[in-house]
Image 1 (spheres, one colour):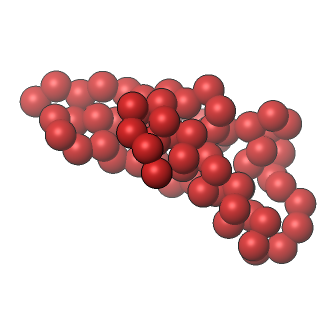
Image 2: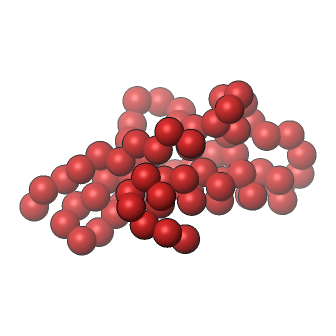
Length: 69
């Protein structure tokens, strides 16, 4: 089975790992933190703002993998 690393330019990553790995027909996502990719810092605000940022990061990874939310 072939594997392909997915890197999303519009999502922030902490550490030397891929945002996702495509293996066959599956895409496995790494965990997400509420980092703003523009600043590399945690977003300010409550859990709602942080959750929103996590999903924005996940959507960016989906797009980089050629998928849509």
